[in-house]
Image (tube, rainbow, N blue to C red):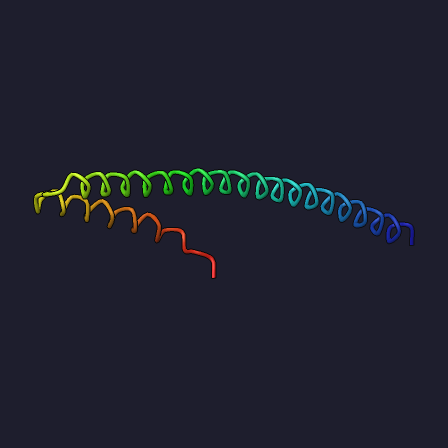
Length: 97
């Protein structure tokens, strides 16, 4: 009988130790997840800002070229290529519905 009680206590002690270990691992995982989520949000904010700046610069360039008039087909193609690249960047982050 005493052996059964001691065995039960040993099993409970091991279970509690395992639970404590698992709880600590879960806390670390959740902390890491929160840190990564914050880092990703900061990168998204930075990329969104950069995307807006790039699109604005391309629009300003296109407006300046149009105001100057008489652009060559090569210049028109270069502006079209820049707009396509800007659109591809914009497409990486779908607009909310």
